[in-house]
Image 1 (cartoon, rainbow, N blue to C red):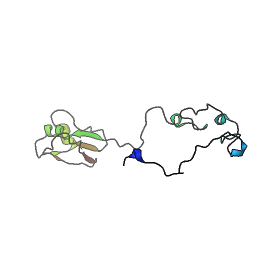
Image 2 (image 1 turned 135 degrees about the vertical axis):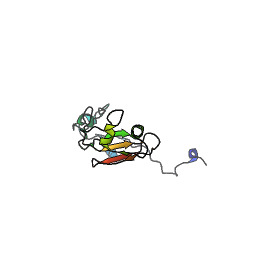
Image 3 (image 1 turned 180 degrees about the horizontal axis):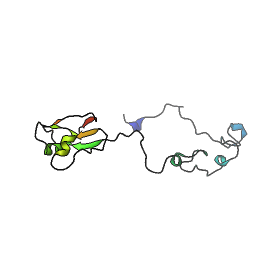
Image 4 (image 1 turned 90 degrees about the vertical axis):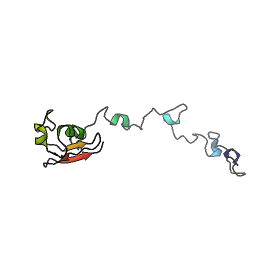
Length: 139
């Protein structure tokens, strides 16, 4: 048996409702369209996005951009950058990293949590937090 073989039971199919064919049918005169107005006329179509006079959604939303007031700023430091500047087993703190060769790793003026990103293979460097907040992100 296939889907194409399925048939409804006898007398289960109804003829389509014929509207506008006289008052005796119960659906004559206005044919279920109500009184007057554009919706009762032939050929009427709603405009795309029309919400009955309410300001439509595409006009309620801003055109572009969004400012998240709860955004948490973080300073991202890649672990392979720290590994290149410190010997294995060395302790990494923001002041110590700024004294190393290759320039400044942590911005001293930033009072934001530091996120260590593991871009490459993990390396043997101890990362110490000095109370600024520290997160480890596995990228």
